[in-house]
Amino acid sequence: MIPVAELHGPFEPIAGLAASYCLKGDCQETPPSPDGLPRASAGLGGSGLSIEFPLGTVISAWEVTATRGAAEGSAPEALLGSGRSEPYATLYVAAPDKGDWLLRATIHSGSEDFVDYHWSLRVREPSRPPPMSDVGPPDGLLRAGRQMVTGLEGSFCYQETCGDIGQLPTARISPLLRVPGSASEMTFHLRGGTGFTTWSVAYWDARDDQGMETMDLAAGGREGATLTATDFQPPPPGDWQVKISVAFRDGGDATYFSHLIVD
Image (cartoon, rainbow, N blue to C red; front, side, top):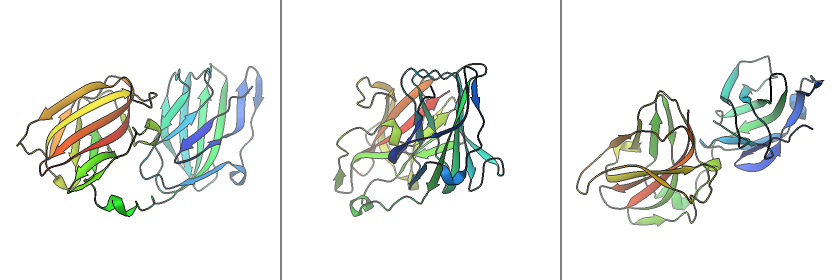
């Protein structure tokens, strides 16, 4: 039986088309027609994607690629993510850039068994935020090596305006940052060089949507100081949701969330 693969993002989950597979000697090779693929369309705005399988699905290796606006095999592929054993049967990948894409996820469950899943994805410019967001804190930028993401804004008080998100954002909707094992430090700063005085970083298992087992990673700064950036070591290898909290030099505070996969 071919396991169902659902593409998750800022849209309703969409089951992929299993066009080619080889499972226990039962094999099929069918080139998918782009016109017949399940379709998703969203303004991703830097958020990542996930592909979820039923619990118990055996995944020994996987790869997710995207081909821009053409049939697979006729245009260069972009690698969105890859990995080895995934015991929790969820694959997290970076979202492609703006445009029309054909997505392919290949999972292996042994030396010869595999399934190819396919989707069509249109990435639009992100929608404009509601007017309330026009008065908010500066973007929080997190860098690891050559990769950088803009953190998902959480609760804040900034320039006499406050906003409360009500509940923790999940890893599924938070910007994804892959941290290579060679990265010894990560860097956080605020867009425009906005100053801050104190900061702290906490993290927890990305599968824990409630953040029930939060761990402290780093903290620093002091009242009266002015920082424009700070460095800290990444969490240990794993799949994590990260919250960065800062207090602004001119008063107020804010939190920023990111989804980290540390190799």
